[in-house]
Amino acid sequence: ESVFAVPGLGRLAQEAVAGRDTPLLLGIILVSAVLVILINLLVDLAYAVLDPRVGAGEASA
Image 1 (tube, rainbow, N blue to C red):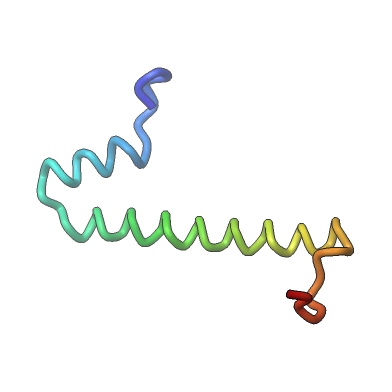
Image 2 (image 1 turned 60 degrees about the vertical axis):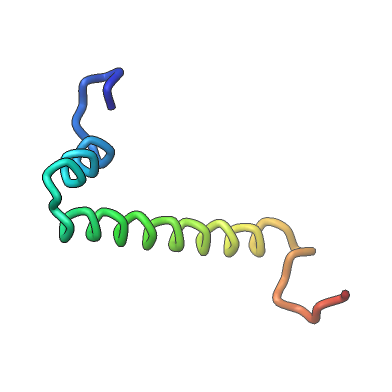
């Protein structure tokens, strides 16, 4: 963000902390957490499609 001088979520979060804007900060954290969860889910599904050894079969522990 600071390299390209483009405002983004990092700067917005920093301003929310500095301005004690709790709802905005919680919103940023919530959206970030949901994005991480969705991306992990998509990656797990892609692994199952691309690699047949990684399936929903029985666990072989």
